[in-house]
Image 1 (cartoon, rainbow, N blue to C red):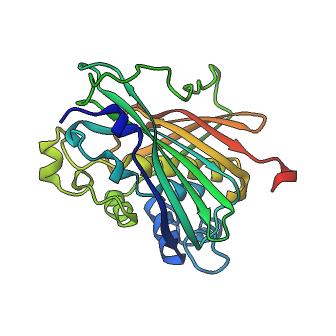
Image 2: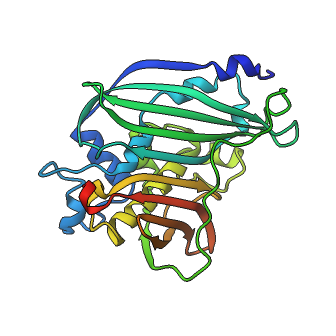
Image 3: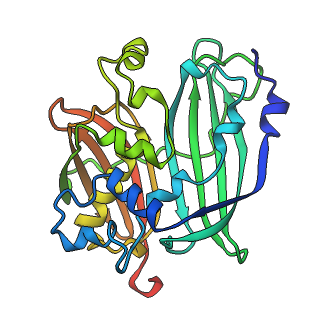
Length: 286
């Protein structure tokens, strides 16, 4: 079905109640590999209810953006980029009001498809802003609908051309996708071997947002001393799939309050997250 640009750009789901608590916070942390060593007291702060803390990238799960993609060729849809701004530290439990909308849609032509930007804002029940997230969706089968070709609303962040200041290796579990999917994304591509083969993969792949969470975990561990309040923003571009059980190596470059990051799979030397940008708060802001 051809995209109607005016109808697509007007899509919005507003004022949706959304709540989460310690169970969801701990399950997300386990889903992105926290507490592989259950005696690591730093990581236990994210997986045990005593003095519990939330990983900032969990906020990428808020919202109902998927409802806005009705009518697209879902067999050709991929999650290309994720951006996240935290207006205040993410609490481990909250009652929220969430609004998702199509912020922009670019037509790259019949051969290249469409690029759709889904923006989700989350407010605390008090009305105070908590997070703003933007997911970039590449709809490869839906180009040629007559919409604008550009410019894109965001520039791609370039990582520095120098040796990384920090590098962190994190191993994913063979069942990592089966754990992560319990946080909400039940796409069979990440669990059903037959479905994965039909989609062109030799076996189920890891969720892009799971790899995104691993990259955030690497920065929490290597630069933030496991203090999630130090992270005010977290952006990344997905460039290749990850298979559960592989080792993720995240390189980091620190320039003031900006941490550029890139993640590759050690076993295949393939970059899977690129053009990453984390924004850190100053000591006075925490």
